[in-house]
Each structure stands twice: as C-alpha cells, then as structure tokens.
Image (cartoon, rainbow, N blue to C red):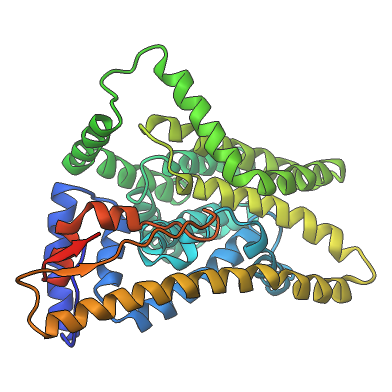
Length: 392
C-alpha cells in the first residue's frame, strides 16, 4: 500500500501518495478509507497519532450523544471513553494504523451523518443552513464511498428519520446529504476495482455461484462471528434497550437504530467471508444504546460521581492490559524493523535480509496479529523497504 520513507519532504511524500492512490483506486480498492490509509502511512507518524487521537474523541462523542440531547455531552463522552476499552470488540480500529485510517476514520463520518439526523431539532438545523447542507453532503459522499455495506443502512436510517421525525421529506436541503451518500456508495460499488476485488475474493474463497445453500451458510457464519466477538456488547445493549423501553425513553430513536444495526449485520452476508471489523458501525450503534441506558440510570443516582470515579479506577485494568499487549508486540516489530534498516544501510539487500515471522497469538479484541500476511507476501514487504526480505 505504501513504502518506507526516510527524510523525504512533505511535497515528495504527497506526490507519491497521489500517484499511489490513483493506482490503488484503479486497480484494487477505490474506498475513501483506502486512500486515507495510503496518505497517513506515508506521513510522519506523529501527525497520524495526533489526528487519530482527535478521531477517537469524536468517535466517543458521537456514540455518547446520538441517543439523547446535547446536555451533559462532556460527561457522556467521558463515560464512553471510560467504558470503551472494557467492551469494544476490536481494538484494531483504534491502534492499528491501517485499520484506523480505512475503517475508524470513515466510521466517524457515518456517525456524523447519523448524529445530524438523530432528532427533529438536529434535522431542522440542517434545513436552516446552506453551509451545513454543503458540508454534510461532502461528508456523506465520502462516507458512502468508504464501505460497500454500511452506507445502505445509514441511508435508510436518514430517510426514515426524515419521514418519521421531520416530516418534510421533500425539502432539498434535508435530502441532499442522503442523495450524496447514495452517490458516493454507487461510485464505490460500480468502480472497476471493486468488481475486480470482489471476483478475486470469490475465487479465493471458492464462491463460483450463489446457490440456494450459499445464503443460509453465509448467514450462519455472519451470526457466529458477530456473537463470538460482540457478546458482552450485546448483553449491555439488551439491558439498556429494555431499561429505556420500560422507561418510555427514546422509543422512536431506538427503533430506527435497531433497523440500522440489523441492516449492517445482515449486509455482511454479501461478502464471501466474514471480517469482524465489518460490523464496526453496528458495534458503535449498539454501544450508543448501551451508553444511553447507563447514563440515564447513573444520572438518577445520588452517588453518581463517586460511583463513576470508583468504576473508572477499576476499569483502568482494560486500557492498561491493552497497552502492555501492544507495547510487547510493538517492541518485537520495532526490533525487526531496526534490523532491516541496519542491514539496508550495510548494503545487504542484494543477497537478502533474513527476518523472523512473529507467531504470537493475542485475543482478537485486543490485537489482530496480521504477521501471517507479512510472511505470505514477501514481495510486498520487499517493495515497502526497497530491499529483498526473506521471512522464515
């Protein structure tokens, strides 16, 4: 996807990024997130780290406030950040640079669109500002061009929100972002590179026809992977959902989000294999419901602040565990990277630099070890370092 940079200027990096992005869009992957990944992986890491931190905060803000008004948004966002490491099914979206750029950053764009259609007041704000309509339409187009499955669910959510909440569906300003997201999605799925990638994976996974047995088997696999990765999150969701329904809170909002969640999960069936992070939007919306119920319950307790402080201290276990796992893995990766750099400087590339494959296995929710891909694709690794790499 990218190559190793040393002391090259921003201009040279950006020129390479543009050329590589055009090639990637044409030949393999036209997703907006793919182009973000090419950009960020080609820039100095400090800038990506800062941007990823902002994205992480925005992500927590959106999932904490999609169901509810904007009151106590700081407290709600803080509650989300406190809990997310204990319940989020796949940390790779936060800490793996490629997944963050390809999935996390476009996911925030989808959540921004849902956020802007979450209530009558939010939709009314869209119709009152041409600048907001234009901005949202651009965001919606980029979000639509980022995923093959999730945008359809968001388009349906936004459309239902207009019909059932705002009730002025013919307003051009209201429907413009919806149409824009649809245009972005159509651009992606009709791109020749998308067709090429789909045919390639169909061949890899032996899908030569969509027989009557294919869809039930895919459905079973999707449900299995979803619940194997998101069971704790689903338990929290069911508890909060039941609590809010009994309390007669946000019933219409909950119904619309359940529709979106269901559509995201079911849409993964269309792929020939099930990648857990394909459920990212569903995970985010499920967590949003969970947080809404929890915050509503805690805010009615006398000892809310003291309970929160105690819970935050206890829950520090999860981010600390995540830190130590990534620290251990990063130490091994950095040592290998340093070895390649030293051998490159010593002129040993022609005969080949021998490095080890990292076999460490970690729970998926903490770290997705992609080193098997590293071992299986020495030609891409060699191209990245501009040096012959031998992996054993």
